[in-house]
Length: 415
Image 1: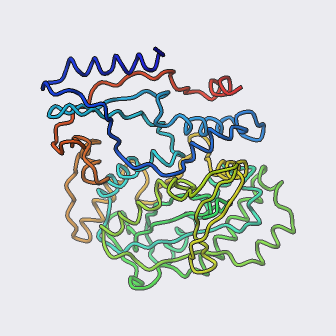
Image 2: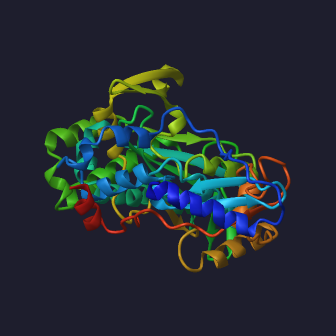
Image 3: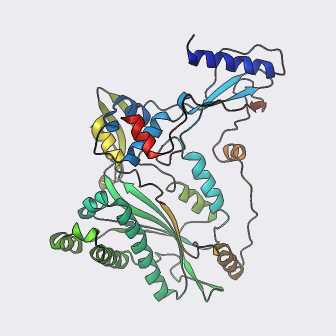
């Protein structure tokens, strides 16, 4: 008997000593979700050139390695046991890596639940700031520097327009996306901006363009272009990547800033935010086929009216494209600005609510069971066999090998 089968045998014996009824434990084990046909972890496990390649950073290898272990026995497991019918459900632990497409649903709902406490009863605007492909090489070689400059210049642009027209402190929530639908490098910021400003730290001044766009998109694009190119030229590291010809082409091209009309209400705002906050470069459900070293996935071509198409890449090229969107360690891809930022943001938000006559929403405490039941559409305590809410969560079982938590350990294991 192997170590794994012996561990499973001891597991069943442990359950049988705790069961409350005399019903025998069925051999069938239930699963919680239907799995996609192809997963990124399948590709990473089958094509492992990235483990020894020198073109990948240690942090990228760390993230890719974590995804190969996600929801496998190597990260340990926990079991749920039904007190009514003795059904057993075994679940493997997740990697909790922010780049893993299988680990984002719960984190997204937790983030949205916190944002519900900060939503104001004012119009919100969605604005997207994009960067031309002439700067892709710079973003590829200096990602942390350039993404920080992108956040900085976008906020300076919005704040400048707000100070002139609203004469107060604006707020903004920005989410960084680095990918296009076909996994190409396409850095852009999704910004959710309340339509107004906090004046004198007390009063809310709403924008007079409630039914239209908050600021002119072309004017935003011109100022954003000037500020970002200026910041690149001033930085000692980035200015080496941009010569006169690149700078000239940047100013000759019209930069794209997408401005959308305001949302309907607070509920729509929260639902809309959830679409962008914890997305990964590609979800497993977009992967259509993986065979003979070729990966086929679906994407939307926005140049043809968001028509759905398919693309096929070699598994090597697919992994290379995917790894471009693995952010540096500790980098915050969701940032808050203005009255949404800082330790006293709750005080500022309460002042705005008082000014507009909005009641403070009740704070709701969320545990993972309540979050799963009300937000994700399933109840982990409901038995899939008898349908009763009688599942008992048993203690976790240790992993076969503890997951590495340092990049140096990952490098040692991979080599």
